[in-house]
Image (cartoon, rainbow, N blue to C red; front, side):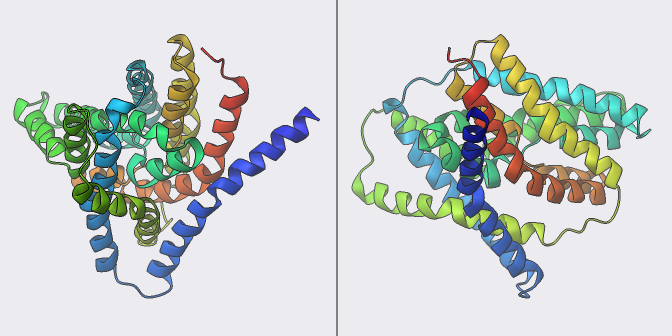
Length: 323
């Protein structure tokens, strides 16, 4: 009976994720079969990242004063696992695939850099509820800064034998100019006033925030339709294994060691189990390595994570202790 109940709950989790799959598939079909040009996808991407998602995050963080405090140990669990999986990825890249240092850096980034904006936010809303977004926002604030800095230092060291403060400063400035980070910080500043948003601001911001999740998923599908699974399938499979299996497993283990409460643990495991982020492909383009491999890993991991993430959330609800 318990096994039947488990599979029934798993099926329910998968059904909850079905709208995500449908919206991604709709975007993919529009981009691949309906003849919608790449310029449409680029425009929607820009709107989602620059307007809709920042509005949603601003709205969430403006009410931060009403939320229970976020346990900062979730950052240790999440980014501690990033560092561990990064090192494992470097070893795998150099020993198993004999990659050069730059390629190994991009390969390792694929194992830790999640699609936490276009996929993580909508999935967290559906599987964990709106209350999870404060924890999600905390991870997002540090995510780009820490991980982009990590790979930038790694590549600069490989190319020049050292790393420059100029490179780190440039990374920091780009993160601070990120509309998502601006939305989070400005919302947090408003929250410090401990008062609700005026209606003239709250209503349009809420309306934009409500369309952000579905529109982001359609846009993600359109973006994925531009990539092909053509080369580096062994390397892509290894990236997916690091990203979808090792990364959430290490986060889970660190969360247990830290006695992190179940709610925060579910958030960081969910974010760690997301598909490979598009930033990995952008990094591959920047350094001229592994473009096909990273594109393939994005497509494959997006497909697999629609099933693996709901399974992980269900396993955590059954087997993670309630601290």
